[in-house]
Length: 304
Image (cartoon, rainbow, N blue to C red; front, side, top):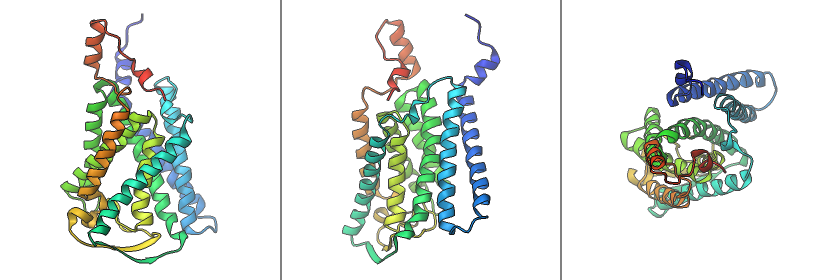
């Protein structure tokens, strides 16, 4: 066996793979957005439809880039974007995200803090729909597809889940109207829920669908603020008032007690369903190997 060179050791290190993966996907996404946007400006299409097409093309481009890059770099089949079971994971994931968000809003309604002011044309959902699926695809590729997956290989499922939940929550601290509490809420809710969804399905379609449905229902249907950002057009024009612990205040329903409860409960269920798909940290695998214990290889655990 040929000795591993310093260059190979650096290129194969988890940190290098994470940094290069993020850079490649991030740059590709930005370039695709810019090029598609400028091209569509030359057409007579409505601005909303231009944004929709731009979102579809840039999202498809970053998915293809991720698959090609890691197939070549890691010399493996990229199973996290496998077409096997794709319809099931997208449908079930969308239902889970929609139900969790609806339950969160339902609590506000029962507390008397949710008022429907008016209903709007169906065309109002184009912008929130575009934003929801674009953000879901991009963020899940970066956080779960790259960071979670690579950290999990070394440190195991539980530690990777904790690390990516902290990162995800911290990233949202830069959002408008964000507070330490809202960042903590997002980390617990989305960080744990999406990570658990990835472990359960061993593909990215499932967490992408949950993430998309959660955001879309929140902003596109219920007309609420999403992650502190400015309100978009929505199917319903609503007024949300009351205790910030129940409404989330200016950050939106994600920063609520009930959102944490519902999402943590869903995460626990997904983790229970994933007990045979959990990955142990490398030191436990080495100990088991030294003791001649039978352990399931990481690549087998990750099969869909």
